[in-house]
Length: 233
Ligand SMILES: [Zn+2]
Image (cartoon, rainbow, N blue to C red; front, side, top):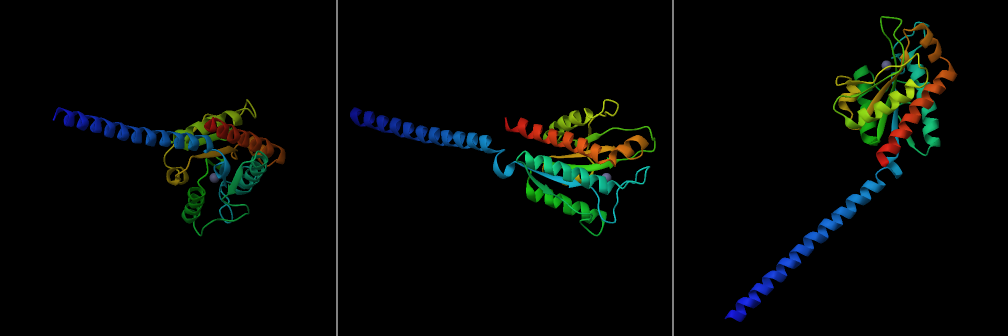
């Protein structure tokens, strides 16, 4: 009888060990899988960003003090950024590459843009715009991010710092926002880059020059590259 109990205890103990080993094995497998995902999360198709030049077609966006149309500056800067990012091996999806609006109304246009962003699933979306204000002395680039997005905030911080380096007389601080349609509805990290104020005569003049557009594009693209590098570490 005592022998039988002894066997039962041994069998129970062995069963316990087998179950424990299975659990440990599964845990190890999950751990390895998670680690592999982390290591590869920034490679291949995930090394991708969406660039969104605001407005287009009959929606010109803001009009500058010099008559410049926002939609045109947005597209030029975005296309310059695309070129720089592709040279860095980053895949770029554009919401528009020509002077077109993406829907029949502004709401439809924004919906379509958000659809492209969400379906592409990039590491970051950079929406390019130009600012305007009643006071003509207000100037400088400014980056917006969605209030509740840690990734958006991290990217905004990097891009704002890069843009502030263009000219020490033209610096601003990044700002959270929870009401802009794109920030609210995109399911991926988004930053809105307001490159400068078209209501400021000096800045409006700069923003239409190819040379300055190149500088803005290079600063913003440099920020994107830095952001991707930081999150892949
Ligand atoms: Zn705009």
